[in-house]
Image (tube, rainbow over all chains, first blue to last red; front, side, top):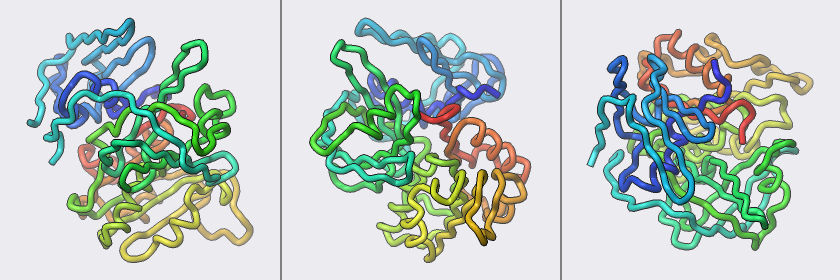
Length: 85
Length: 248
């Protein structure tokens, strides 16, 4: 276990800066193992940026880096994102 | 309900300190007034940003501990000796001071009275904060939904909101303490870390399909979630909020 691990909930503020809807209840599907679940239930790690990982297979779903007035997203590990309207 | 509200972009807002109260020797509750605050849901958090004179900024997330109450909200902060943010929040802030807040955020770790129960709330130390917002909202709404709180604290003096929890208990709310480091003379309650046996005794049982909220340091949350799954609780009914190795 990594003691620095947090939940996807912790990304709510950063996601709220750019998305117009509440994102921690959106459903994310892992591009590696296919498991799906709410963003708030993903594993979150903070370093120079934020990495959301799949709680089933540990695949890096999303990477977020902020700086110089920009936010950079890498959604490469994610298969889909389902958002309630 | 969930996820359907269009919020628009979040921005930083100025919050003014309107009250400071000691909860325990290491824990302080700070009340803020935030002009234009649109309210929050129990369990949500805010991001706090402090800016030093040289422009250096530090951000931390804190759960809102109060029930929705107009433009007022309360944060409960543990003083971490070598922390970057908490010594200032918990030790230096005085009424009239201003800080920056972003929120409320998070729609996942929330409970509102229409969600119903039964509820099993499990907290380690200051992990009680977002669960206290739920307990306070439950009381304010006159809800009698079956609610079991299991709160793990180091010792009797370290129990956050101890008197208020005692007052609110009853009307369907059961409060159970475990004291892990030391116990007062004559203590007959739990005196160990939360484990499966304790959860089985306190909780409503997985067959009743309770909504489960677990909040505390990451190792605490991991251990509790694992024990609950071992008892037959469905992983998707267990909502967790971890705050790292020692908190903020």
